[in-house]
Amino acid sequence: MFELAAELRAAGDAPVHDLSLGNPSLEPPPAWRSAIFELLADEQPGLHRYMTNAGFEDVREFIAAHEGARYQVPFTGADITMTCGAAGGLNVLAHATLDPGDEVVVPAPYFSEYEHYCATVGARLVPVATRPPTFGLDAWAIVDAISSRTRWVLLNSPNNPTGAIYKSGELDALADALVLANRGRGVPILVVEDAPYRDLTFEGVGVPSLLGRYANTVLVTSHSKDLGLAGERIGYMLRAPTLFGREMLERAAAYCTRVLGFVNAPALMQRMLPKVLAGGGARVDVAVYARNCRRVAAHLRGLGFGVPTPEAGFFLFPALPERLRGDDGGDVTLTERLVRERTVVVPGTAFGAPGYLRLSLATDSATIDGALAAFDRVCR
Ligand code: PLP
Image (cartoon, helix red, strand yellow):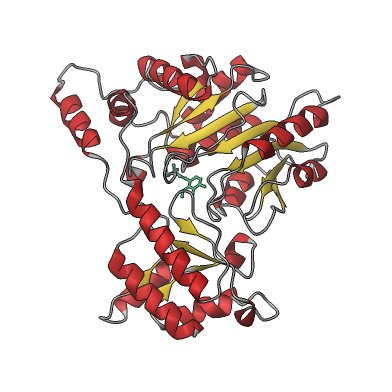
């Protein structure tokens, strides 16, 4: 869809209203720029060389303390691997822990890149249904999908594409169910939390985690979205100190970081983190994303779409009104009609969810104005 938007732009002068790609539109906060200038002024030799594959020791210690305070879990630097974004972290973890034929259970709809991450290690993604209309977690559906080959349960909260935040009660139920499912298994199932949107919640909504709830949890995150640094590739993997095979996984993560060719996360970005995250932490102005999401949600409801209250991030995943659904969900047809109005969205079918659209609202108001006018023309 991103390529299609580029083609539309090349094919005419009228603006294209592109709501297809989750590329953060907000600039990094001023604290980031000051930290980078300060770091560049330091001319000590060696600051830009290779380091140990897991990342700078002092940065890992800082992250351990910072995240320890957040989750009330006693992490040490050994539990942290610095990564090239969340995508780098997920791939390192996949190579470190998945074998060909292993299964990864994932609530659907899900971030479609997961299929490719699994494919690179010969693992298989096993989607399970969530609870409509809010796409809440269904612990029992997850347990039903578990087989002898299940190695990960992969959670993404706040979720791309749905925006859902999994609730404490849902996670407690999942933790209890997994403890039962692990009985008699040599190696317990790993819960992998992919959390790059956890600091983009609106008005202080919390994002509960399985860290501290389930012993075998690994959280992977990045500052692509909350600091607007998607192109700088900085993130990390946070392993519960209670993890089965804790030390082996620490070494495996460092090894996979090296042999996958990342070698290490970018040095300057690592050194920036303690400066920017200390004292509460700067972030992009989430109020802009909140305003965009609420405005578009209200407008689409007026056209008959079903839209849960947006709580985080910059994606909406509206359900098409009955009259536009047809036999196949209607999302591909509606997407094609919107393209004719120079408006680009992603059909839910791309996420295994016909009958929905995904809209990325990390964009400016003029693009949103144009897109909503196109929705009015097409849907009315
Ligand atoms: N996971 C999800 C759910 C995402 O939406 C994205 C990016 O859009 C990523 C992972 C990858 O993010 P990063 O830039 O941190 O690699």
